[in-house]
Image 1 (tube, rainbow, N blue to C red):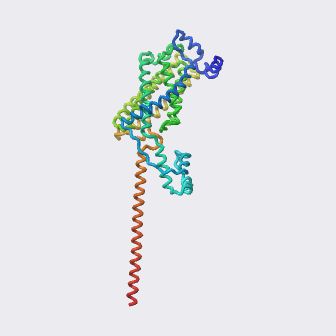
Image 2 (cartoon, rainbow, N blue to C red):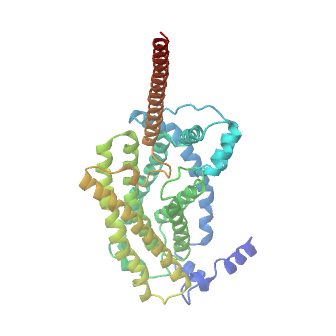
Image 3 (cartoon, one colour):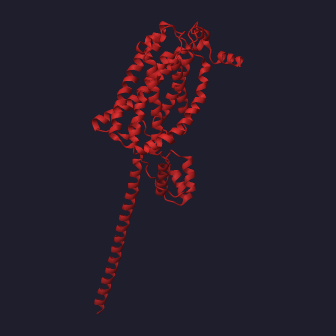
Length: 407
């Protein structure tokens, strides 16, 4: 076991990459030899079973707590229209789920199924509607994240508000690398890392949103940031990064919950509060206080090294994502101020599929088409009848004229 750990430390946790010049893992351990905890890379291994525990806890929470709460708040799921199963169309849908059929595909399906192009398009559209997530499921996901972010933000704030680096960020580097890690900060790290690992493991079954790719990048960058900052004993600045992110996330999730429940005024009020907190923490506090101290203040303690560029590069990736999301939020705020409402298609919780209001539009379109078709058929029938009557009348007139001539 010791030999395996030595090999891992030699190849994975290379001191010349992860630590400043002249600093070793032993320096970090010996600097806190008074019995207090010091960062060791193997401490992070506990996050993997905890991530699986979070997934199991989420499964129970969504069914025991979130679903009953959604009913009490008035969340209603739209009743999906039943469609006749057509195996050949079902096979095509499963193969090309998210893409619209091309004209060649439609012509092939017409020959294969014996239906018209419009019937095939209508069937595929209704089939996509059936796959859209229900409001109760979206509410359950949002409530799970809301509960976690609220609890972890409160716990993180309580554990950090009395620390010197919470108020003076230059204290993040005081005494580095021999900085002890309190038990509260250790578990703050482990729980955050386990939670983001659980989100990454569940990404294939969670509802895919418009910013799906950005969320994946965010989760991966966050996991690497937490792991690296713990191993290199950047725990002080790492706790500030996590606290800043948690400060607005629970507000966004609460706004989503009330949006699914149909509480528009409450949702919009929470969204305005979220937007204010997000813009202040992600565009002011994060870049000008936290990123600044990691990039500039840290150089008073050590010179740049590979781990320094790795850590700050991930911070800049997060900041780029913050700017992207801030742009979306400002667009929503602009519509809220000048139009009096937040457009649903701009919310970050909307899925990549169109929202359920499209289903109503599609049904109305179908009814409108049927109505127009019926009206057209009646007009054609009337026209045909008139043509028949006219022909009969003309024939009768001709016969009468012939009879008169004969007489």
